[in-house]
Length: 196
Image 1 (cartoon, rainbow, N blue to C red):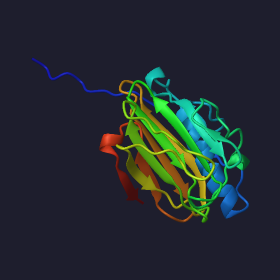
Image 2: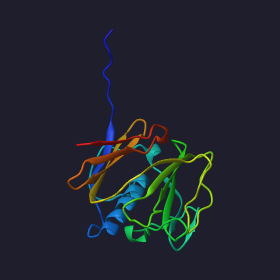
Image 3: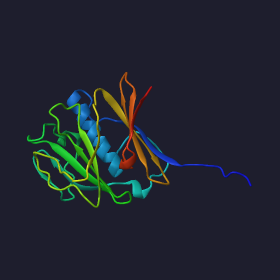
Image 4: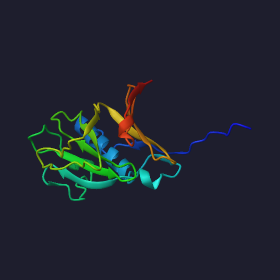
């Protein structure tokens, strides 16, 4: 009996341009905006290949633009300029999404006065994020902080997704630095790797 050939089909959206790239703040805002639009499958630009699995597309649960906040299915991040960075206790932005097929919710929180860092957290959809205001992001008793990314001089974001399982990987390329790659579709197996 012959060993069956193993194959895997992937979708990609590589080298998405940042909307703002003249300041560190604009780069940071653009990185978060591209992460959000990539999860929602509404990102524009870049090179694409393959078809994205419907189950890998996230939906909006709520957001804050630093002026208004709520877990009300409203996406207040219409543009990268709607993202406000500030410490918890000060008006800032956050975005909350859900991937029903995976059973997880994601929080992207611009909870730092330094626009070069932010927080990404996950929780099972059965114990969703609650609360949240313009002063602090939502919380969950079972949330897992997956990581924080120092945006630095990133100029592009790339996505690679498995068309069968819906697992999704992202990469933020920094000028003259290694590429940061993370897996955010399967939070239980979250990983970050740096490679040349």
